[in-house]
Image 1: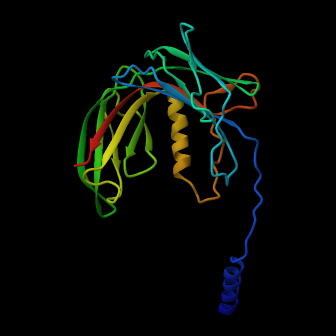
Image 2: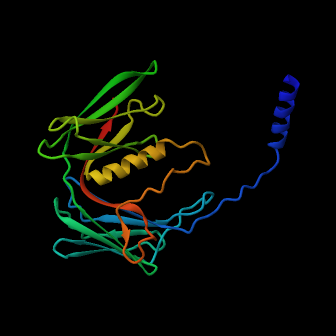
Image 3: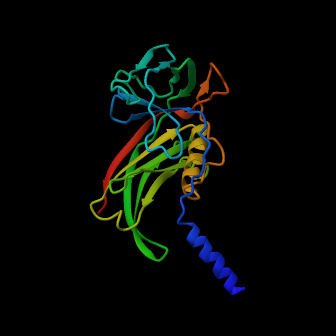
Length: 272
């Protein structure tokens, strides 16, 4: 029996030297609308960007951008804010006169390739980041730096938050979501830690908190879980994660992405 097992193993290793072409089905491209409007506290919030791309096949090295679209946001007073692709073929549509107002309702309209996509959301308030705290914690037997940043929850309402930390030593920021179910009206915090070769004295962290709706909280929670549970290079999300943007021309041809507006509180922290 041992010889038989060894023979199979040897055969498997030998066969791995051959090139195997795996045919993959490519679905029709879907429009992806990245329409997150964040009004940074202390600024006018007049300059905002919406990015349009499409989905592509698994082995593509570049994400296709979308040009030639009409992109607008309209507020409750029917003021239209136009987003224009100022750099050709970038897929980045810029508005320089946007007027953010907390509590106001805004409607996104994207017209592209004979289809009209829309979504309506309210611009939500966000608490200030009040303070930071750094300490050393033990993680699986190793000492690591942990940084916390604190903000005050509004006890008069149900709140949901999007947290983000960008470490200068890493290419991709990390996201998290929180709700105030167990912290109603209390001081809340986000925290960040990383391996010692990525988080050390002198490292600059850009940390932020943004108030979000319950629906966007659920959307981001699922998206973060999908991103964190990859099962290898050929894994795929268990479901298509749909946002709040609908195709008013053809309901079945829905886009991907989300339309969201809120204040955002940011702080830069240098690790001691």
